Length: 174
Image: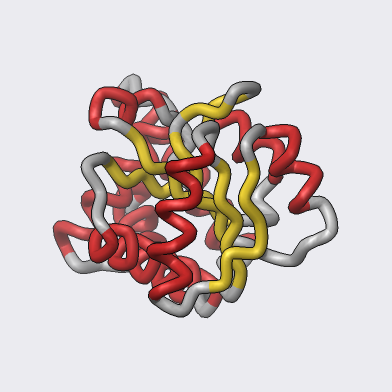
């Protein structure tokens, strides 16, 4: 993740964060004050890390994420009371108060998560079907939503140290 774009409604906030990042060797390629300006700025760019507040004059973090359609990554710096207002799980949320070290740790953690995901093996169609069947089983027999079923399999996998696909197979008894 070589480039970072900032999006904050207050110019002072953006400037303060830009100075923190510049001093740490990060390249801030754009500073935007609105959702529309951010979308225009990113339209011709390769993957960029966006760091923004919770709300811009013309939209919130979830709406910005919809606009960028997964082409870029997003960190949202929010007041603690707004952290639960962000619904998209692909948005990395950092709560205030924030200092230089917290921000840098968040960026490193987030970029590390992205790199690990890039190197993961893609699931085969058969594995995807097994996972979908396990979720369907949990949804039908335990009145779970798809998201709850996914989290159940995920938690069981972490608790037992098994792979996600192996846990799905175990639920189906195969």
